[in-house]
Image (cartoon, rainbow, N blue to C red; front, side):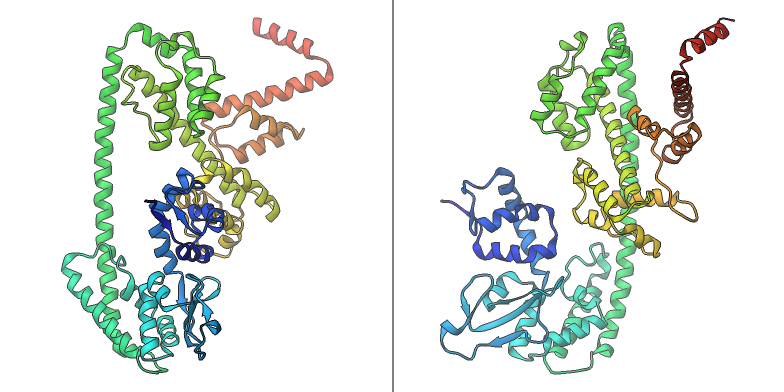
Length: 508
């Protein structure tokens, strides 16, 4: 018998809540939800990925949606005076006529809907159901009083409803935590059951003071756990590095002369670089194999690895960020290790380049809002760009103005915040400068010289945009200088004469 994954009422609730949740996976499913009120596990319109997303995240979405709504303070509860069902309004979720109307509002933008009591119990948060009971049975003004109370003491909802508020609180403080929760709830309930214009600050004071101490204890325990975790990670990394060094030493010792010659060959290195470049693009497997077929595999590798095995490695890298190829016993370990090392290096370089580009578009370059919007589009479409929430790109349009006003960075994923902060730490005391890349491609150098600017201007722009290792920088600047001299010789039609003179100088 088919199982219903999403009922019509749940569907409508997610659609109404989605504007406040801003969840990328839910947003992608919105067209499907609008077209199909009921979704079953056997629905032919349901793709495998959509089905899995609903099965995995439906409950979390409903829970997060329940917390996005609150009862309307000025008219939370109304009884329709008519005895005729045809005169009653319909619940926005189940579409049934309801005489007892609960008016709820989306916290984010104030969007209002009417919900029946059963749907309040089914879809709304524990906090709203608590207020619904008091509003219905004791005091119609309870919601307004609760809003006033939480405006004065914003930690009260956390104490009463957030079960994960103090996740690392030591056991010896658990009894104190229960005392705070029980006392706070009792005080708030007594306050809400009667019409009152004065918040019970004096009665709440001992519980709030104690809760502040508990928060400090939780923070200290959290910091201690984080330090322990970092210590374990450091130890594991040291063990892994030791094992890797031992493995490499053993591999080198066992390596034949033919293997050494193969790994040192230009064909081998060029092919591995081309394959690793494809791997770090995170292409779908079919597209990866299409691109792989366009590469010419050196004859010396053809008996060692095939497209299926490379596809397995590409899939493993996409899932784990590394290549071990434990299933591919017949592939030489040195080839796996070389491809793993090179892929990780290129992936890290791609991520750094993306971080540099995003920082420069948002902060480093002096762009108009329109230019910034256009420049973010390709960065958003890349694989690295798809790993961050959609909301980040809206923040990037205004983060420069925000920082100029002395505000902090928005709450982004930790890796992105860390990357931005590292680049901000290198900014001068006044003004904004771009994040300098640690490598440069011929294409980027062509863009530098395309402006037909003088050599001094191009080198100044080069130093503004790039910070290469010294040896690479010396070669690059020498190449730029040689390029400008060659172009000038061509323009003056003295190339042959210059070449002859140089040859004479070198010969002597």
